[in-house]
Amino acid sequence: MESTDENEPSLDVPTIIRNNWPYANFDISNFNTQGNLGKFVDYSFYLQGSSNDKLEKLKTEIKEKESQNNILINEIKRLNDEKKDITAQFDEYRKNQTYIQKKEQLLRLTSNVHPIAANILLAEGDNTLLNNFHSEKESQNAILSIDIRNSTDLMLNAHSSDNFASFITGLCEGLKNIVISNFGVFDKFTGDGILAYFPLFYSGEDAVHKCCITSQKCHSFFEGYYKSNRTKFQINLKTGLGIGIDYGSAKLVRINSEPTIVGVPVVYACRLSNAPFGHTYINQSAYQNLTDKGIKLNEIKLDEIDFEIKNQGTVTIYDLVKLENTEIKKPDWFNNNAEDIKTGE
Image (cartoon, rainbow, N blue to C red; front, side, top):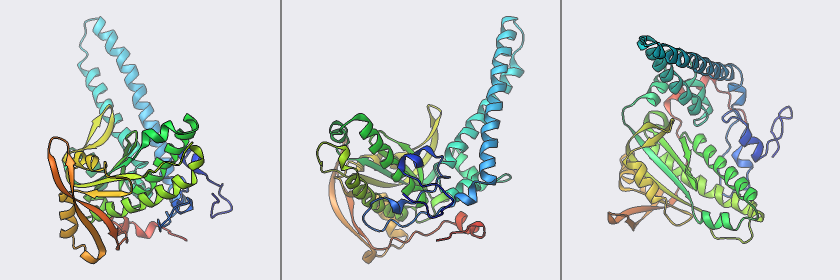
């Protein structure tokens, strides 16, 4: 992959993975994809200055707090052995832990959102966007669950474990960048796919529509990516992505110290990602949101189909067949910072 700037290094998939996204110069159109994925504009020049300094400052602050807590632990142990009051030290330790958790969440979040959003999240002072991400309250979200169909067979038919690891890492990094560039939030790699969410406060009121557009781009990306990586496998398996979309109330919680999105729409999106490869299944709540937001019938084709959900029986869901309007509407936080953005070519 060649850089558009002769002063910047050439980047291939492993190089991109090693870099700390969103500061990698990732151009998703350079993968051998079919369909118009669009170009992810290089904003690295915008972020590598003050924002990169802020990231380093954030990492330093976390290390300092961790160091303070190590000292406090030793002090608490000493005082406890001497049967003295440890209340003050323990309170300080807990405050430090809360601080560390929030800063670590911010650090992780900056690599899972659009680069311009990362820059806003790192800004000092009153930060509405960051407060929304840190809120313990439920919010409205469109949920995108992607499952790599026949992933076990793919793994078993790879020429080597290194071949499969290289394939799956590059694939998931590509899917992650499609989510980010379409104003979604990457949540996690699930083992055989990814989970992402599109909160209304971040993605905009048309979050479900953005989910649908993202799903189509992910299908196209997989098709081209798999085709260009078939030499890693012993046979050419028929495979692809199964994608599920739902909409509703969800919230971020910490599980094993990592923030992750949870809620009813997450459950249903994950179940719907059992769709046959190449298909995107949409639940009723997400469908209703699309129609409420004025998506015209001539801009989208959905087939009603029956789908079996464990412990609930057969339900009616919608198979996304065609999407005419693939224009991404930029969210307010992006437009409000437009004067600071040089889009270039």
